[in-house]
Image 1 (cartoon, rainbow, N blue to C red):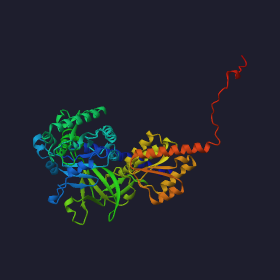
Image 2: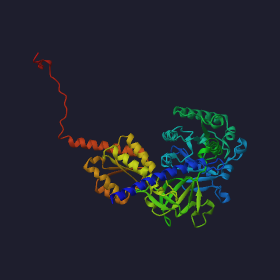
Image 3: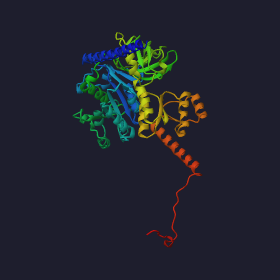
Image 4: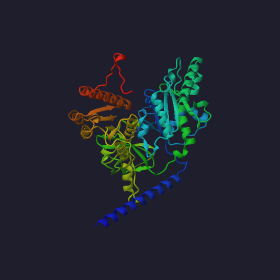
Length: 521
């Protein structure tokens, strides 16, 4: 019997190896078949410090034309806004003719995610999902901590980016030139405003140079490959919005055509899993490339192992003008990338946000098994790495998505805080019980550090009962502060307990040199 089992295992292994090779060959063939004639929408990420006006800038580009009763031809995609070709042309207006740019991309998919985690979260299998990014800097405040953090992220991922120098309308004496290109707007200003703009811009250019990056105002930028373009904008009054769109489109079409050629191989990342009345658990995904169809089998990374299911429905939000219609979503038979989609399917409730969503080949046996292993790779690696390092002693780390968990572990590692186990999602009773095991080894580590996740009611009761400290925060640094303060308190407590038994060192003083005798020579 044993030999029979062995041979079937060998067959499985051989089958998997063959499926992997077949997958590689097909991917290579698909990459070779791409043409510059068929481009997909570039995916653009918008980053920057808190309150620099990221969302405001997007709102301006999205600009809702209330008087026409429709929203300027913008489709609200899930977790992302999709700007079709005609809207881009419309917003760039006079700049298109002036700079002789033709918009060849089908549109622009802008992911508006809060500040910096978006990147770590959207790592779709090694290559960052974003093809290009906008980094927003407030002209009044210059570079701020998160601006620098975002810059370093972009450099690490080698993502090309454009800098939006926002809030130019705050310059003293600025006269409004609504929605005009910035070059025209600055010509109409007084000399004082021009001078203030130049001095502030050059100060920011200097501080960017201190970070080791070359930047230049875009209309003086002769070499966009070497120098990053700085585009002055105002999200309130709309100056410079046309310029930034033109820079994004021009940059992707000129320099990164090979990044945005369409291919049938599916590249897809789960942003988050939500339960929606009437639909059950749904997964919001960004489909970067390829085509998803109804009825496709998909493989994703789940908490209790890989999740294999069939696509029951592909939904995208309706364009805004159809809000009167009762159905909230448009149903599709198939969707081409790049797009933000809601997937309805069974068994989605355990899917890990931030994981890849993979589609197996129907005609290759064992391909499904291979993808099951691949899908679980990320989570297993993280969990294993965390517990191996510290010999199983440490705090319990939790986060909302794979990306933010990775960021949290990286951060705890640099802060020298040991981690014993990890999990993703809200803090449940079972997490608290797991963390309470540390009472036996090192009681001060019976704590949960949770980044950006809620604490459930039963979790809270269990934590009180088993004396587990739960620290939650929406900003990583706050977690660190809370935990170091707690560790300091614990240390003081331990010192106070030991005070009665400890032998304290003392300083003795010899009363006079006459009392010192030296014996033995």
